[in-house]
Amino acid sequence: MVRLQLICGSAGDLLDHVESQDVITSRFEIDGPKLKSHPRVLAESVPFNMEADSLNAIVLGEDVAPSMPEWDISLRK
Image (cartoon, rainbow, N blue to C red; front, side):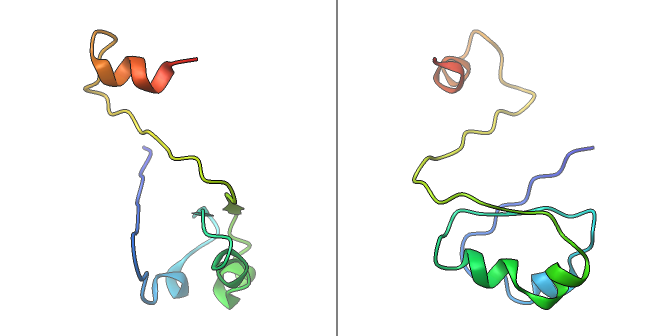
């Protein structure tokens, strides 16, 4: 099972509850170092990725078919 969670705004005390099987990705250069050095992230060796560019992501759900415009937009080369 794959789960995706997106947080826009404050994460509250979420980092206090991460575990080693979690993965954190941040696209904010300013907050990235702060998040990466959080004591719980370090103690649990939580994988951390920081995206420092301005690219956006598209996530396709299982209901998107090749005949739909979303398919073409996300797979455009």
